[in-house]
Length: 153
Image 1 (tube, one colour):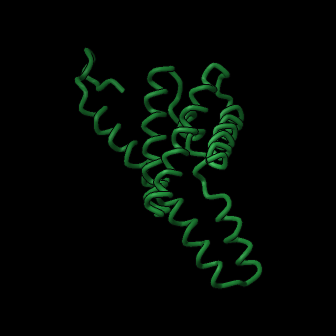
Image 2 (tube, rainbow, N blue to C red):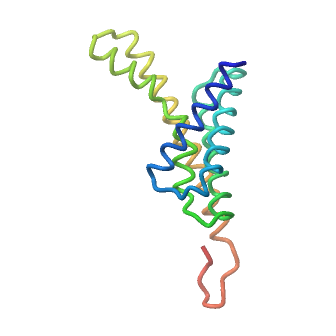
């Protein structure tokens, strides 16, 4: 249990680092911390119960993207800043490192295993972001036109 708490706190602090790197204003930092911690908790829960790298990353990325869209509208900031910070803890840095190390050491078996894990995680993140962004775009395109005849976006 302590291990999980340390992982979630580390994930949220790492996300704050990226948020500050992206020049997100300091008044929005608590939203980044909350979103990244919640997204990483979802990822850990799904990995525990499903053991599917693709599904865990996809659902966590969908949650993080939807939350970023909500925060962007509520706090009047670009959703990309929130989304990139929320998703950063999900990026498969460890498995990518082991993939490259296995390639350099010419360990074919480890290279195949870690390469597949990295590809599944990256695919899950990409599909999760794409799904929520596409749904938001479709919903926004069907909004009533404003007085000029163009759709409000």
